[in-house]
Length: 568
Ligand code: HC0
Ligand code: SF4
Image 1 (tube, rainbow, N blue to C red):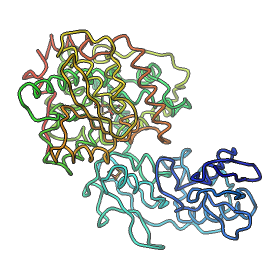
Image 2 (image 1 turned 30 degrees about the horizontal axis):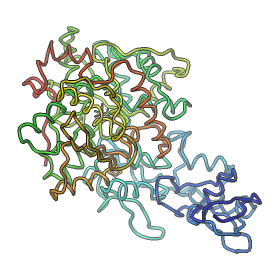
Image 3 (image 1 turned 90 degrees about the vertical axis):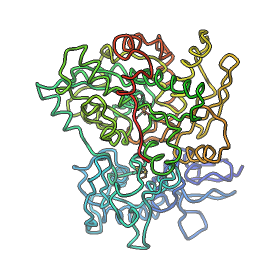
Image 4 (image 1 turned 120 degrees about the vertical axis):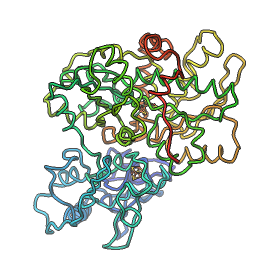
């Protein structure tokens, strides 16, 4: 513990504390642009400089730790002027078209410019004339807006270990780019969108497809149904001022109905179906000497990753389509037949916390209904935009219920949205199938939490099942390397591409940090506890689906509609 003062306020803190964090303890928010609490990027923008009593040079508050007896000044005229100069230099290179920018009103640079009262900048505005890259259908790169903070590079290289983007050149030429400056689709990018999630400005964003949704809704000939992913309901509220993790399911359903969707359904229904199919696939592999461990297949960034980096492990990956795609296939067959609707006149829209879901829905091999299973995928952020465009006062909406039958789901499905959830949902069902006994306590605490890698041994009434869970692709790599080396005896492995699982997806409201993920995770488990049915095989709509349509799990029809194959 060291004793320091910040603007005269005494603070005692461990000597490993950043000046930035020590200042927070004194109630002082030092402005930052490159710094992100989850990342190691430090001192590239220098907006956070402070004065140290007795020293001539400024120090960056994010790049330096405190030392005993130090006296920091964060708010002198010299500090304020220097920060303003730095900001004005950044703004001189930045296109000043905030009105048209996707990050207008939640851009970190815009906020700093406003806080610093930059109304008459000293330097002329000369942005780099870099064209916008908008050719891959998922992620748009407007590198003229890049402030070169390096957050996206760190996420892509260190957190995801993909390495699609990197820094290049030095000094004034310094830039963030892909190898050989290729388009993103010609790199190893898995479309996880984590780079978007950490970008402080509008340099990276998802391809906006809200116009397609508006058009479908306006087309009287179209029957437009919408599905919402588990993790959206605990994050959407943030766009309307709610605390992270607030459960906004009822208001979200009401908003979707007001937007004009003909049916408001739930990806969670299909998540329950996934458990029926994947749980039986696991049991089948375990009893017939199939390839183990079985690895989950629902996270599309992870599927892109395994196809690119570990194609030899593809036989481990479950043949189940993701819940999003299962939903689409069932909507255009089972539901269409039941409701007497021509599937050719249906539009299936997905609301996803994910950018890779846009890529997944466009995969040619995955469209088993005879049509494209899912027509349009929009992110949580895009949905919020639509609700705002429609002038819907989200917070005043009364809670409403999803439509039947594809809106009926269980607690097991909700927890898909957080790391460990697919595993737990599977265990809740597999236990009862294997033992024939009722599971008294459905909470499998050992597979929960935001730790990057979790391992557990689960006792299925005497039969032991070894499982592992990884979230974030760096952690996935560790498990995959072990499997490759034959060093593990897991039977079942869950891999989610994004840190924390879908709650931390690349399409979620901006401002996702570890603390926010924790809140969203808590919201997910609360939503699970509040549901009357918490096991997938007890979902009456799923039982009806098998009785009326599919027969049984892994049936021929299931295989046609709900399973797929991958590209090495
Ligand atoms: Fe997920 Fe899913 S849990 S991947 O994170 O499995 O995106 O929320 O929709 O499909 O259900 C995302 C979230 C989903 C799918 C489900 C799975
Ligand atoms: Fe890297 Fe993911 Fe961004 Fe692609 S989407 S550049 S893999 S962080």
